[in-house]
Amino acid sequence: MSTHNHIDYIEFPCTDFDAMKAFYGAAFGWTFQDWGPTYVAFEGAGLEGGFRKEDTAPPRGGAMVILYSTDLDASQASVEAAGGETTSHHEFPGGRRFQFLDPTGNELAVWIKAE
Image 1 (cartoon, rainbow, N blue to C red):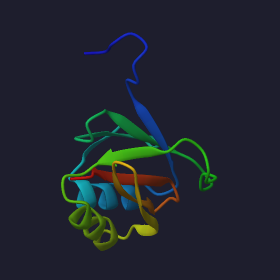
Image 2: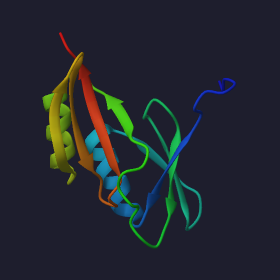
Image 3: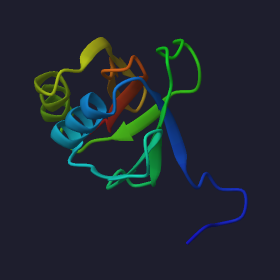
């Protein structure tokens, strides 16, 4: 159910739908629905979203999507096994996280709460 002023949907730019579906499906178990030649929707991410077709990779340094994990090491292994590139890994007050690049070059992070 949509809630007033809450983030409702997220879109990632994408240069290669097949690579993105293979990566996010393998790394996180997301599922996909193709909507023509320029859009693919995804489910299973906790928030629905999609990949929109672009001709060039996105610039880095914009807004960061951060996923939560109950096993950060396993999540990082899944990301790397699926072809993601880890860009950093660090601790901070309250937890740890790693950041990665997907096949198109979007940078995301995965974090876990400190025990």
